[in-house]
Image 1 (spheres, rainbow, N blue to C red):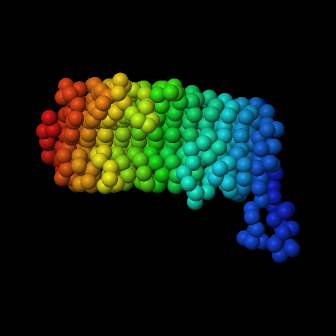
Image 2 (image 1 turned 180 degrees about the vertical axis):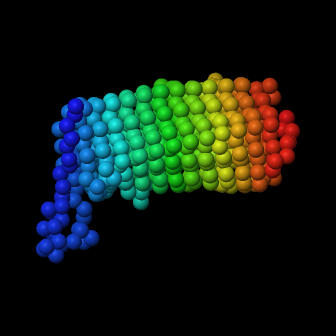
Image 3 (image 1 turned 90 degrees about the vertical axis):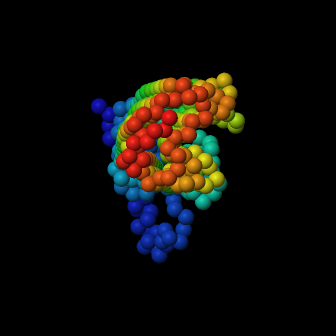
Length: 362
């Protein structure tokens, strides 16, 4: 069995400072990057490290490189003080993190690098349970090309980029009850860029997306065999649900085998400069396709008039095939139920209702 290691404390330092009349409110917080990194580096496979229930400030990137360890956050917070080096990176397989909050400055520009995503999952078989990201200079949780990852009750809020972003061949992963709030871009996103590997076999259960300042709610933009169930999405800048293959400048991969079943999309596509609708299937990368997509048992409410449609299918200039909508309940809306700009045979739609009354959308 692994040993249990406790972190070093700065309590004695704080007490001594207080005795001298020096208070933390009048000085920069102590940088604990070195001490935290040393503790992670001295672990052995199978060890557990239990943090103190307090805030640890780190000016540099923290890297977890020992496989098979367990990080018991115990209610602690890892607070980055420098946006450009604000990440905690899990670069080893089999790491489990529980009960931890992570924060970063958000008063600068949106960042894009691995050192700026708040929590980077870069090892296979990593699990995150009851983890909260409260502010990030880039994405909140960045799942980077790994397999067998598991996120359970992960909450992300107030990021400058996506809430939870899975990319570069992220495979065989589960997200159980993820929650995002006020993200700077998509809430929960699976993205396969054309130059990267394709994301495959991801299951997202009971996601909650409460508001995006930009972007969409739940997105699959290049990927295969992705299942999303029992969604609660509200007040997104763009579409609440977005299934696509994109052209310039992203050139994402084809998208196939996508299932979205059950839940609600409320007040989606609030940005009047963006015309998505509440649910959008979009094939915009020439030579690529969006195919075998099923959206069912969804309640869509209060889509604003500027969205121009509730559900859309657009093939420009890519192709679509076997797109199916069933049991779509529209409420509090006067805009078109379904707009299809693709070959009619490529889309099936059944059992649409508006305010409880059946409507023919063919």
